[in-house]
Image (cartoon, rainbow, N blue to C red; front, side):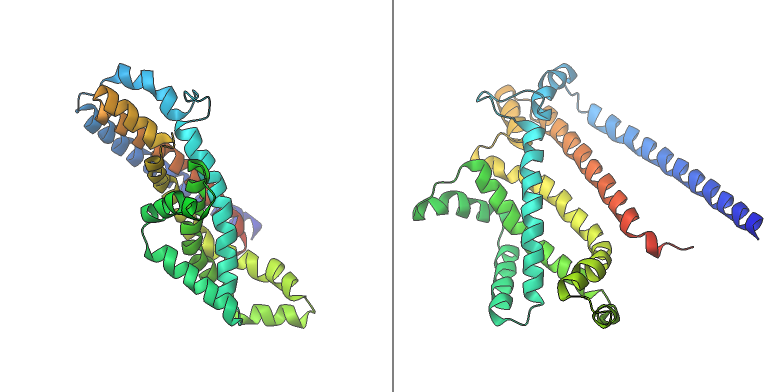
Length: 271
């Protein structure tokens, strides 16, 4: 029996490797066609090489601060943390029996999902100074992205929490678990598995939507690309390079998402 199981695993492993090789070949062919398509535009490659360090964030801005892709990642990092907190609190509010908590959560998700992100950026950057505080451009961008994506994550987290069968909660209560222990040790680990794929997609969308904060003069990737493109009339070169950098960063997030899915899905794999 053990020998048969070992042989079966070896066959699955071989089939899996063969499948991955075929996928890699498909990717290579498509990537080659993709590169050939853009090279047909007659791109000025020396110009791209010269400006690439600034777009990638390897050099500092004139003010001595980070810029380009590094600043984009900086903004997204804090926005992701804040949006996860907001999304989780809002999801718990939606599931609460408190009329106040439910009302605040539903109003928050309705407004920030129902209005454009660009409008929200302007409301925060130009509206808050009307009542006193004058926020800087980068904090304004982080606040806008956090509030917007927190509203979307709220629905994702709520769906994840509702996906856990009621019997799981009843079993935890029967074992004498405190409600917070039940949430952290029983409900959350199962809800996370369901929430990871759509949450990962939201973070990738945030990475791209962070380009909207360039309207405030933040020297993130899109702002730098537009600046060099405008000053040299090399828009295609700069926009193509920016697109490639965004794609690379998105692939990195996809890999992180894949690892998390694999980790939280261990108990659900076919044996």
